[in-house]
Amino acid sequence: MLLRINENNIAYESISQIVACLKDGGIIIYPTDTVYALGCDITHTRAIERICKIKNIKPEKSNFSFVCSDLSHLSEYAKAIPNHIFRIMKKALPGPYTFILEANNNVPKLLKQNKKTVGIRVPNNAICKEIVERLGNPLISSSLVDTNDDIVEYFADPEIILQQFGEIADIVIDGGFGNLYPSTIIDCSGNEIEVIREGLGSLEVLS
Image 1 (cartoon, helix red, strand yellow):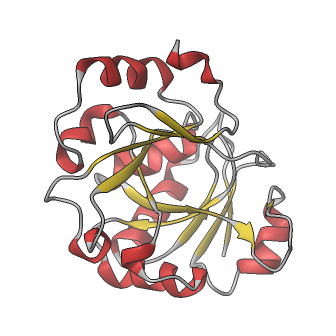
Image 2: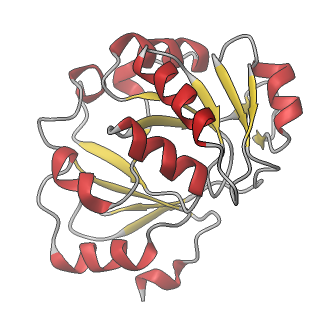
Image 3: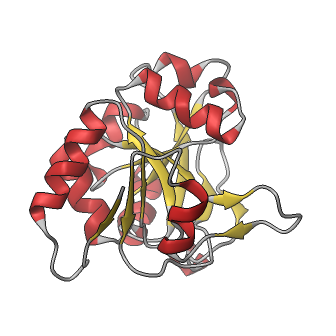
């Protein structure tokens, strides 16, 4: 199913339909401030397993992000964050960044096996924000990529996304053309801040 939503004039009945799908264990493809992504409710184990099967990865070896509507969810899934890290995050988010933090015991066991970190995203996208706020839980999220290409290609056209992935997702959200660049990944889980991937987000937030 394809749902068209204008980020500047959100149809809230469509958001209700999406949230109902997620609460029922559904998988969506949705826009962020970077690339389109696969997502499901963090509380639905079977939905997470479905995404892992689609991506052909094991849950314990996945690098999913937890997509939040704001920073209020941090204490739910991450250990205490040093003040200097929190200041960077507050400056960068919402925005095209993924912050790797030390995970606490609230991270779903399915994802935490042999892993001590969690990736946190707060995209600057009104559709995404509205979905997460109405859902009441973060989304487990993974970038939509063409794994059949030697060069990693991020899908930007919702119509092409529907053609390629319409059968594996319950809802494809058309929020307009997406970006071709992924988020900047910043690892803050160790003693030193480390940039894992330079993407759309500027590294000036670190200065």
